[in-house]
Length: 202
Image 1 (tube, rainbow, N blue to C red):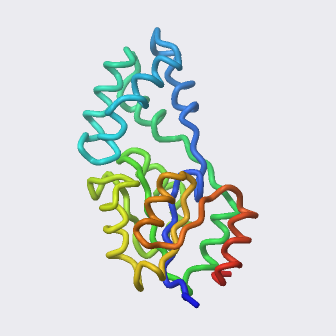
Image 2 (spheres, rainbow, N blue to C red):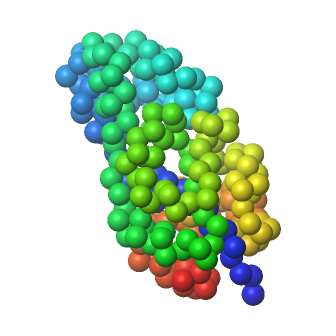
């Protein structure tokens, strides 16, 4: 029987929920564009991918968003509207301290400079239990690229088949399985708890 030594957690919609709609609702008063138009401009092109892979700085990202969305607000307001979108998944946040000491805990997140700054402050009490925070904008590659999992593996204890990966997105879970990790696609805390018990993690 394989004994897990490292657990790699995704952040978004696992440890903390996020809602891009909060950003858009705060920006609509500062532009003549609709929320749908801003969604197309920001989220459906190359810009978000470039920002999360660290190819675009926060300052340049904000400049491009202001231009594309014809925003009249200042950069401070825009940065806050972009960043403040998270709320805790409290059951998972409560689980993590129970795992510390028994497993090496690694965060593996597709994120950007602004979002990471926000959730690292907001979730400091939870994230302090992690041995390493691996963030796409810092390493220059996003999930589901194999290089992301390779980078996380360098911070893991044990071989790939002694690692467990928890993420909500099917593409990321499939890529992690192909890398050789055990995987759980996060759907609910009840399902997660059942799966962890089946793997003798809990």
